[in-house]
Length: 181
Image 1 (cartoon, helix red, strand yellow):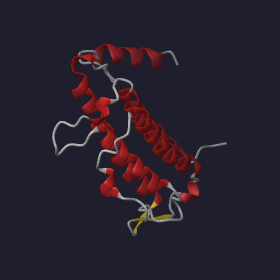
Image 2 (cartoon, rainbow, N blue to C red):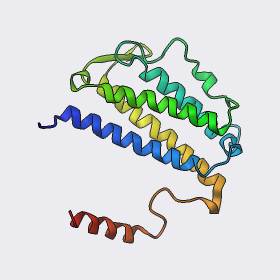
Image 3 (spheres, rainbow, N blue to C red):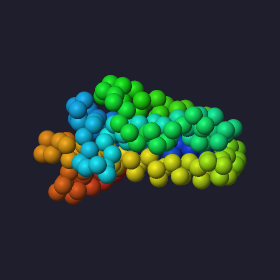
């Protein structure tokens, strides 16, 4: 059976989003309960606030994705930007709840859904555009989470990507890995 462009697109979106979730997860393992509430200044969000916002957005956008407006009446976006006062365990449960909602919905979509029109805040969007919109939104916030984690951990930070000065060795590793295939 051949794979269609729509199927390939959905698989690619899921793969890319899971890469960003993994970066968040790997950051969280390096942090203490207190670290989730650190914010460098009053204009900045803590990791707890970012998780709260992302989960609120994911639950609103991806619940009944094809049939209801993505801005649910019960969502209080402004409240998402206040520290929820949760500990690490509860924050991680909230994080997982949002990601599960997102991934379950994406995995349920079919190629024929991609050109359907949905709404977010009453704005009509085709499904592909709505997905792309979130594919830009969530990595933005995960990058903030990683950066705050790096600020908190300082020299104790365990790199989540290619370490400084290790690009040449990594490129050689990848070349060797793919040459064996």
